[in-house]
Image (spheres, rainbow, N blue to C red):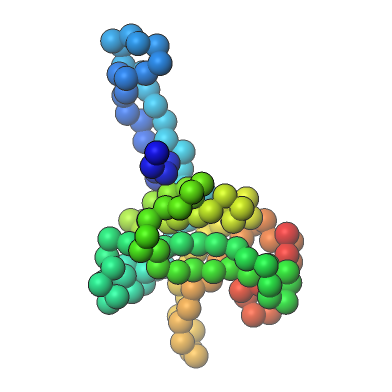
Length: 141
């Protein structure tokens, strides 16, 4: 089946096709996105997707071994859709795909885009990181 779709705010709707088999609508609440994309990051991600001709694609957010602190973050345009076990979220209009292992490290994280005097780039603020490296893309948990 397809991946679970989540939103930044809980949405209440009714679903009559429930396991109870009753005709009475039963409220269903979707889970908020566990990764937040700031408005600045969403604008930049959407610009990049349009520039690449991939406006319907999503952003894969992942964690992999490496970096000076043990783990490093990764962001990439995902054209192939959700893989086995991936979770699909949406935050500020951006589709996010996250594999199950990365999800355990990224719950509550925030993807932002920051402009500095030397240029701009994406940053991830992660409440699960016990320490980070000076480069900003490596952490330990």
